[in-house]
Length: 151
Image (cartoon, rainbow, N blue to C red; front, top):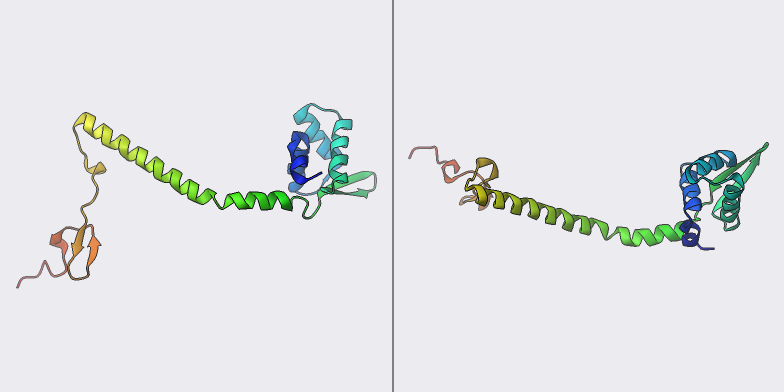
């Protein structure tokens, strides 16, 4: 069974989530899953068996307890698939941020038009080009270097 098929079942997916935090005894996993899904211990044991037979988890007997942990590399296929799409997220989030900013700006503009007011809090700074350095500055021409000197 491939990793995606294993994770398709919500009970198995929850067991994997629990074991992703570290190894855990079968009884602890069972108690948590039974409480969340309202299933019995035999159903949890069956799902642990499916995960074990698929090579997704490993089990170790410690006394009377069976300790489960995720097998190394069991979900590399899922990780590689998610990584391929994760590279798209930053540019999509940047585009979303741009659209949200545009919406806020349009809302402010609409508010100003409806009230007929412009307040200093909504004004953009005037950009001036410094002739000496050919750089833009938000200070007016009265702040040019040397403007305060007398000739």
